[in-house]
Image (cartoon, rainbow, N blue to C red; front, side, top):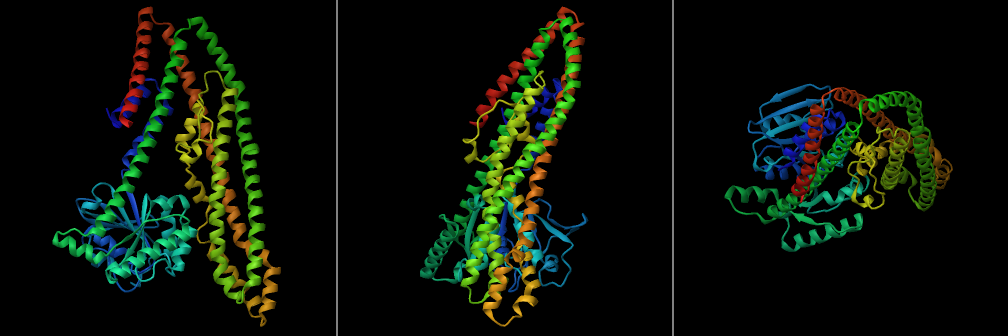
Length: 579
């Protein structure tokens, strides 16, 4: 018995019982299972050797490499027996081309073409490393002066399973690399990043060890945790590969990648098992519902039909009140909580900036170059902390909604549940367990992980806004001759300087909160409508059954009993498969 077999049999039972909710969940599972890819993104400043490293993994000279920055847009490399490439444009157009290096040269950063209308270049290669679902993503340099290229790199990060971050053997962990790691990479993603010192063959043995030690020490101080650093030479990897020899540094890199791949697959299996358990529990409750109805005689069923009809009419106003309360109580409290925390953050940050300005010998440099990075860094920390708070709040509030729903619609209409399909391990112990099925629906239809919440809050490129503010003030402020006059003016007008960027951040955060609660309402409404329709249809079916012969009724009861036994068997099989 495997996951496919269990999923298929559950779908058959759901179709037999006409349970639309379970059928939708199983379709979601099937779609999720079909996405059998391991997304590996390669990051680093320009000329760190990203394209060369990828060529060495593919063992072919495919991506252009040069002394100038070459990768201007995302290159997404997947497996295919037939080799070809596809240029995907922002407007949805696609152009297929023959896969060769000469064609790809047209899309280099210095090629002179207008690349802003191109979304990505998809390369389909017959390479061993790609055969098991590995997808390699080549990105522009993280310190590339083209803002378009930088934003592309930032936006891909939340969706990668793992990343290789390339450092230079001669100067590991530069300021721009440190800023990128601190402002753009979420803290819970650090464990999925492999730090690789490229071009290690340029150093002798002593220099090699010094470079590795220095990079580890710098990264540990930067990230407050120990990280592994892997030395690597793309040139040696290709040379050894052509001779059929083992290049140990490449072997070490491949072992680390395989471990991250196994970790991603394990997490995926855990999510599939969790959803299949939801389906089994829903179907078991549906069977119990049928068993109760089958125990009623025709008169009792007709009385129940009348009662149910009245209850549904009465419940319409109650349901709309519940929807309003999600906004008036839940959303309003979440926004108020965020505003309170943001106000404290803003005041503390502003006081820190005032102190820093007073200590600066060059205020113009601080405002134009240092302050934008400080804002990005502080907002990133605040965003992650606030994301955790919002995550916990949404978990608790969704449980409250599920309990309220059960309390007001308890005529077999309710099944309870618990939000956030796959909450992070660290929060599971904090949350009380619930048998509420609506919570389980939340889990399936609102799959917001902590990272997604934080990622929604974080606004990439906020430094650009601050940079714009600095430029706007340049004429008014920095044309002044005396440094102390500039300093006093900046301090007195600090709110004006900061508010442009921070108020934009707040607007984005509030929009995120509102969209989360809109999704919550849509989920509850869909569940309620589906559940009500199914209950009415099931009752009508049972009324038809009541007109059947005793023999026919016993046959139907036997069918329900068989389904119940089958569900118990599938539940046991699921435990065995996952174990």
